[in-house]
Image (tube, rainbow, N blue to C red; front, side, top):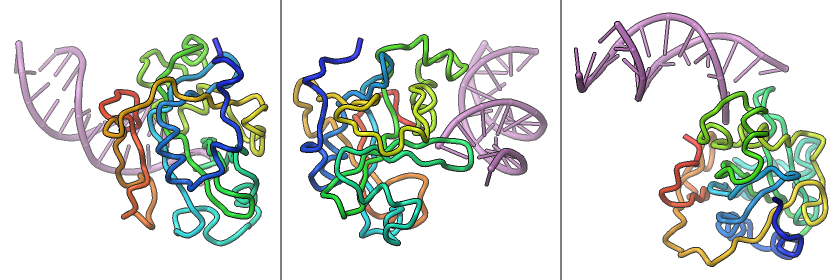
Length: 192
DNA sequence: TTCGAGATCGGA
DNA sequence: CCGATCTCGAAT
């Protein structure tokens, strides 16, 4: 079951500093239709640092990043995987949170079918895996999370600060010193 | 980033 | 021996 509509995050949530949003998204839920789970790993990207696609300005590829907060940014990586991000900060500023892993909650059979594997920890434990499990693709680029087919839903209770760990981002070659990756501590569904 | 193939490791 | 773990290349 998809969470209640009034729990859906809108532009207000995303119109804040991207690092703050990345931390606060841990514990929220990402759904596409009846399929989704709890966000357990995120990374922040900002136009001011060279690991961000927006670093070189609004090029054709990065154009979406400069749109209004709460818009989906989906791009194709390694010619194989779609990676799902949420645009943050005011329109005109290039910033986004990459969703890197989910703990599967709903539609697990569907996820297993789409992924072609059984183990729960293999379904959404990486940015390319979760888009496959949730059937998120390039067609969802620029969709509006507040009302489009893909939605993010508010976390239930407050998470203790210490339950969220920050560390350097993975899979990048520049600005590797920034601790802009956020994980739910001790959760077994984060990427490797 | 992800996957599978092939190599290697290590317990029994 | 068998599974678990690693390393490497390929997919655009």
